Image (cartoon, rainbow, N blue to C red; front, top):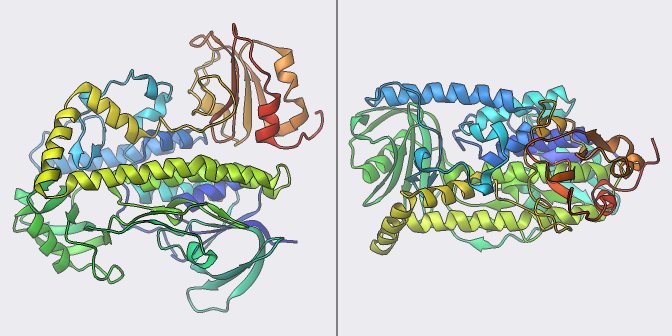
Length: 515
């Protein structure tokens, strides 16, 4: 017997989202976090399209939109302070290695980005705001979140994990049992280290700072990303936000607090502007240490988010990669923990997420190469800048940053299989995303086919069956959409094709009997 099905170490966005997904799947989850409050340290400033789509599928798009509106208000204030008109900011398009991508050059009709729905309009969502949103969502779902508690140790056996939890206030430690343990405890993950995961990669070569600071003499700082002869700096998109990167090796000490004098010296060296830092609201150092575990699971212990992969933070890829991990793992682990699926289902977690993590590592390494101050890198950067100033170049870069191209190698030959489901608008005005809020698989019957619907009868309430029409896609006969929103089976009206029986058995576990 276990106290919990799953203990999740870390209540950042990844750990909280994983807790929510486990709850939707019926698993008893405990999320523990050393910090007593949401970490206000400035980190990722945006979610990509893939993350916005995932959160839309859980009913969180209205809340994300509200967060973005507040962020836009801060951006307008910042731009007005820099001599702008206060007009609405341009469409958020992102950057690649500090090369700003123009929204007016982005071809939104590109097939790789089609089908995202209204989630494609959401991007500017700071990490701390997302964490607060997910904490509220976890509370609504009844997820137990204990703050001020850290994982002090654990031991695994064939039946589960014995976990020791220690309150940070010095109160006595407690022991409990769980069937599974997931480390979502960041790049310095104690779960990863204690479990002995292999963590190969490349060493760091930069020292970076990101801060919200009180400063004077900032008139000479240019907004946005700027490359100089000694490094890179960014100013904005909110008042007081600065980022500085120097290519002189990693910091000697990453753990000591960043001082105003240290940030000021780095900013002056890179920008050439005599800025004075008078105070710090939040400040952190970072490097481009680039590593990934070889397997995301080791027996009863799994990893997600930065615990499984670390890299430079440019573009906020770490946050978005972690959200994808949580969406992929949550429903699978819940199904296994509740006895609805074999343990082998968890093997698909590494198989599906490791290649995407490896791509992100390469993507961030490429950005570091373009940001170096040496003449060869600067020559290459000019070439990429020229490419980024074309519609084709911008569309390619934005498309990759968006994450919407991510797909899994799943059985089946239909073009939609293994890809994120398009957000179909059905004849009754509802969107496909709206039918995924409960975290169940969805069998969408678009041809009013009783034979198709009969395949799902054995699975009871594990599979939502919906018969509908979709005027925009008259070619489609049906889709089986996994709980994470990826297409497991699809068929066209004129193509026949295999039944969804094999896909249902693979992804939805053992049948539960006829309803």
